[in-house]
Length: 394
Image (cartoon, rainbow, N blue to C red; front, side, top):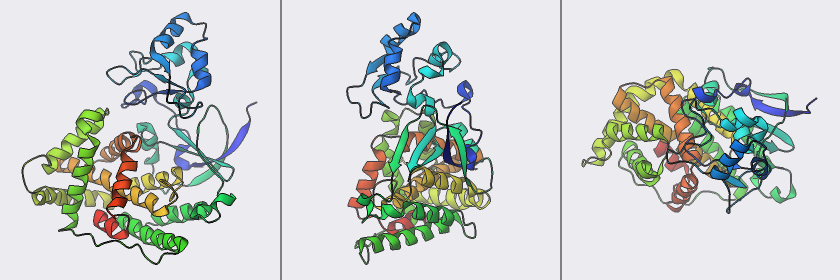
């Protein structure tokens, strides 16, 4: 009998199953595929001669390995950015020929994310998986967190934190559980709009952050803007350009959405930024905001899952405000894209939100450097404050 482990999960995780070849954006396309050391060795010792030839051809040792339990080896991805072990039905030939024991730790566990906080396992799902986010938004009810006993199969621990460890004695990380619970509670309080909830949370965390650091305020120069919409349009236009979408991004979905945003706001046309921002402002006012009044639970669930999964507010580093800042930037970036889609299509659907969150997560959150580089740029410009947040959400 398999050993059972107590695990805290968000309610939407119950019953999740990979839909395999039916998935419209396979996790076997568009990014690197890592192989752990144990699985790597099994590949080259298998008695299945045909599969062993395939492994020799397509699997290699990673000279830049960070962790033997994750990326000891890698799969050579073909020109179409597709795993060579996918068959014509988009199913895994390793699984079908050798069984699930031959799946790497990454392939076996994705999209599951395991954290251990104060000795307790926590499990959530990456939103880069379309089926995961559909389960997340399937109910309007607030996400609940429950304790279940589950058998731990192959898995990768994403983070391991003992908040009471003496090294955190002078760090706000010692309050991680308290701050995360407070943040989730504030985001799930539907007495006000989601935008208002985000702002209230920011002011609360800024106050706590300053108290922890013994500072009275964040000394930043005032941000000069002509209007919030002009600032937002320019900010995200620059972000799209820095992503180099059409030359560096492998996701065909994100590329197509980017084309719509560029078209909807005339981003690449030779016209004043004011004209571009006017199109953005109209899409927000006439389409996005009415949609949100009826469907803001979609983003509430997304934010809550991000907080739980990312050990919020210490998602980026030991500075709690950095975690909050980048959470808001992610939300605002997705909103900008949805407004661009609305400008072209004249509407927003729940499926648009699902696919935009999914492609954004797969493209931006899983990008090796973009989030880190963007955070450093924001801090260098002294945008790590509530004035910037108010402009970005306004």
